[in-house]
Image (cartoon, rainbow, N blue to C red):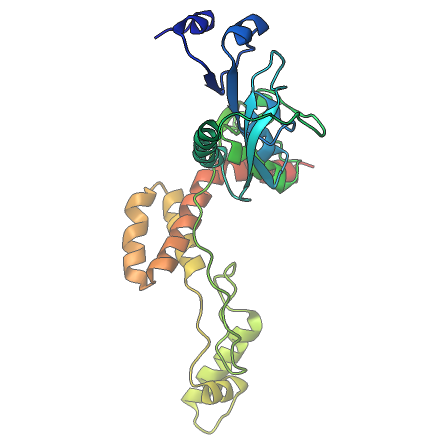
Length: 305
């Protein structure tokens, strides 16, 4: 075992394989020991040190793996074989890299088994994947949301939180977990109860007026109201979405100094919500708690304009 590249020429091998090596191999060494490189892009796009990260930051829909001959220049060698890989819009760099490693391993083995035939020179526009720096991952809140999402997906994204004293604190940001999207609801019948919008914890003034009329009609059998007629036709009052008020209640308790992991579970147990809605409320509460300082800073900056 050695870390000296020059010593590789003396091991008696017919071929060397490098992956993400990060150094330029000199022509003298390559004459003694030919090498192939497994590179994580469709060359000549994203030659260089960070092809996976640069593909995500650029919003590429597709990347791939190339088995190429190693030349003295930076990823300039001819290509023996390549395979394209689509990039999922929500995929992180680590997730994409894992898929490229699997695809590249199979491609390398198949290429070596079939023999290294005449390689194909790289063609097309050349782009370079420079190393990722902290400046590449700073979350500039004036940028579009898609750009911010890409930076977070690369990993290592950060922003600055400002304390009440005015001091800035560098804070890391991580990708959120992905959950299966809810299926689109089927069209409701004309008389079906209409749920209250998720962002509102109370009925609209019109709905409250109708409900008040309905209560009065129930007390006076001789009185009719639009609310009573609606209940007669539909058979039930419109159901109110309790999830927002539950989340707000938990956040109020947390604001008073309680711990979220102690307050929220019993509230969910008493709510009667199913597992999916319990998860939704949990995401609301913990998401708001985690992002509160950043959101407070954004609101404060907006109000100062």
